[in-house]
Length: 611
Ligand code: AGP
Image (cartoon, rainbow, N blue to C red; front, side, top):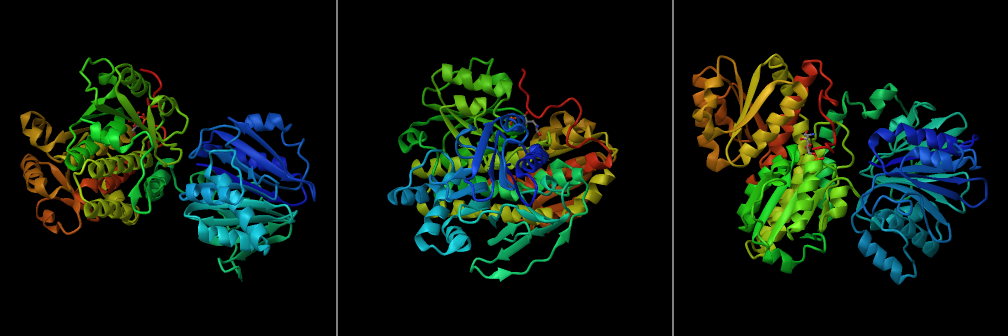
């Protein structure tokens, strides 16, 4: 995710900003930039695509930029390709306002049109340029200073933001505003700092203030002032950071995987809001209604967890749209001469956008003349560039090898496709359409609630840290959930695990069940609940220890299982988004209990760019 650093004090700002940005490298980025101001002189902006090293070279390690006030940014592209032009800081054309931004402005298109009507021109593809020019617009229109301009902007924009802003009329000051995107202020001796994340400023100060949602701040060499949305100055309590630098990078979590598990409500909400405007789903323009109506077969092609997303989506898409869906492993698909329907749509799902087999499958599909859509997390990646259309998930960079938040964001993208296809093809009416979208809106909060109860899962997982085998079973969507639960568990705990369609067990695998073998049954689909439960009972009869994963209210499973896990209720099509969370946590806690390298499991790479 993008990173922000700001400094104002007596030292040269640029080297401090570069060092701060380097501390945020772990978050992932594709370009970086600095804006530095020397007294009343105009702001100087330097940007570079690629590593911070390039920015260092361009500025002679920051020495070529004079000035003791500055802001810096590492960008992880969301709107617009990774490029020098799109990287931050962005400025109004006359340099009146210069800013860096983390987050996503959902209504940037509408705001852009308003600003164009008011004479503004746009040079980049970013939502950030729109915010910068909106601040400039309010600043000049009302002439009531930075707080008023920022507050008016905050009221007008929808989405999430952490903004660090330089105003031409206010040298030696950095202004900030935030909503749903982290931002802290650090104070030191005759210096103040601003950062999206603690590590950026930890080598300078441990004294910080947290800016609350919909609050603003102003820092100068003497400290910080804070304001609410009404423009009133507010008091804040200083906090002392006690984490060491490594813990700080992980946001205080022990591992990136746990941090990313906790980022799922945000990843889900951002992905959802990127495509839902005013209660309607807006897919990429290439997927117009005519194309959607003409599709007679959907092929979902992916690897690993992304393939499991496809497995879950198969049930949802077929049920909602009536279009047959086939899910294929990319490594098989690319060498298999299956006949693709000319009116088919190949959907490639990939977090990295660089997975060799998925990329080859995409190319193969294109060669065979079939339309392709990529659901990808990394802007500008090979799969994103080569597909006919791209739906970007907004999970942000994922560092742990075991995917969690990208998987959850991919599911959301798929649900939105399914709902929109169903609507356009006349399979659902307006009420159902709105009902599904509203239900998706509840998922971030429900995921958050599951995360509140993780200690129970930690206790449970630690009991099975020495297990030899773990079986995950389910039917329908629950089978897809089981597949992801099993992969999460085995890839980081090194315990052999299998996912089975519950009805298949007695065709061979049940012979592996012995005293104490852990069988985790997923029971989120009411129509299949009894069937799976009876398969679990068959395992219990052979000595298995049963864990049941179901929705709130199904407390009767406690008569059968040894350990029950409940997730909030949702429309059953979307159950995967909730049920997967306890399974991610179980895998995580088993790995921790075994003392393993959770974030970098043996033999695995984050991005599999070879066959
Ligand atoms: C799962 O936790 C894995 N890291 C792996 O299965 C991954 O989902 C797979 O390699 C696909 O990667 P991609 O999404 O980047 O294409």
